Amino acid sequence: MKNKIETLIFDVNETLLDLEPLKKSIDEALGNDHASQVWFAELLQYSLVESLTDSYHDFSELASAIFKMNAKKYHKDFSDNEIKKILSPINKLEPYPDVVPGLKQLKNSGFQLVAFSNGKPSVLKEQLEFARLSEYFDKILSIDSIKKYKPHSASYKYALKEANSNSENSMMVAAHGWDITGAMRAGLQTAFIQRPGKFVFPLSEKPTIETTTIQSLADKLD
Image (cartoon, rainbow, N blue to C red; front, side):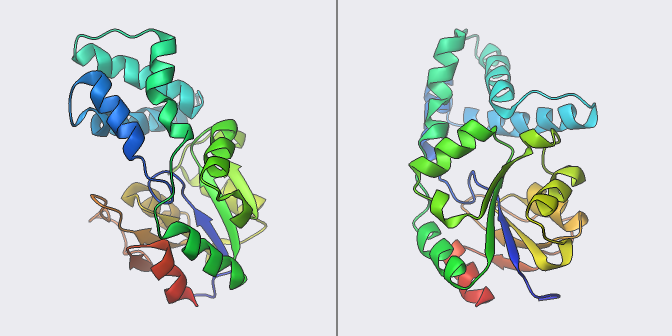
């Protein structure tokens, strides 16, 4: 470890929460087992378009718009209410089994814990309350306040400012190579959580820690 870690900043979707119910809903609606993967990739792509062109629509608006675009590939048409229902599992996702014990261990060890998401504040709040994770976090932050999506460097600087922390003593925890890369290049230490099908970006610097669960991360930081 380069410096003593004081603050841990957690990505939420796929790092803490299992997206499987949402993926299943999208795949079934579009009739393709890989539809959700394409939808999520394009959601990230267009969030970057928004950030780089100084525009902003919240993540829920983008999610619906990208779903509508993808539906056209399958010659399907859905009403706004139908799309809202298809995407509604995002609010009711369960945490991975390692998350609660891992967060509890980290909290007891004295770390400041921050949840930080591209999702809009109301969705993020509902997600963490449903998953019974809110109590573990000292701060719950959305990029909605800065209107620059991760991995834009401004988003990480915003999180550090809100956490009253500095990059050298803060660690971004995520299951996405793009999020880890963005955080590293913004000067943070990083922990990559290798959830199924997730990998480190080969052209990026190596994360400070690579592990498979939040619980194993807690063990490494103890």
